[in-house]
Image 1 (tube, rainbow, N blue to C red):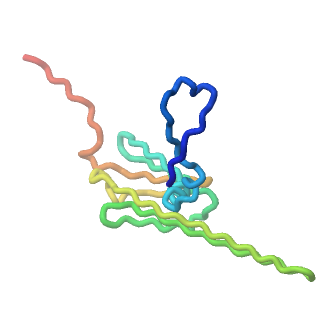
Image 2 (image 1 turned 45 degrees about the vertical axis):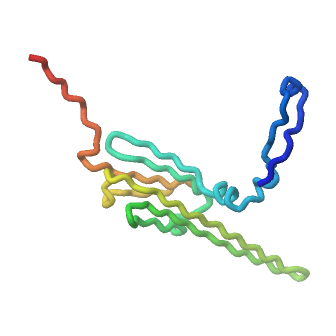
Length: 146
C-alpha cells in the first residue's frame, strides 16, 4: 500500500501541515483486503438460552454448504459452480461461474455441540447454539438481612 500526499480542499487552509492519505486504488488491488470483502456478513446475538448466528449467503442452495465442528470451531464452507452453454448456427457461447467461502467461528465452552441447529432460508444461514444449563443466566437471588 502506498501513502500519497493529501489533496488540499478549500476548508483545509486552516491546517499548517501536510496530511497523508491512503491510496484507495492500491487498497482495492490488495488480495488480503479483497478476500475480506468476499466474506459473508455475520450477526451474532446472545439470548438467555442460546446464541443465534445469522450469516448472509445469498445465491447458494442447501446442498452447497458443508458445516462441521472440529477442535472447538464451527466451520462453514460453501461452494457453487454453474456452467451454461448456448449454441446457434453462427456462434457458441459458454459461461461459467464459481463462488465459494469459508468461515470458522470459535465456539465458547458453554455451547452444547449436540444441540446446534442450522437452517437456510432466503439467503440467510441461521444457527441456533443451545447453552449449557450452568451457563444460562439465572435470576438474581435476593438475600434477606437478619
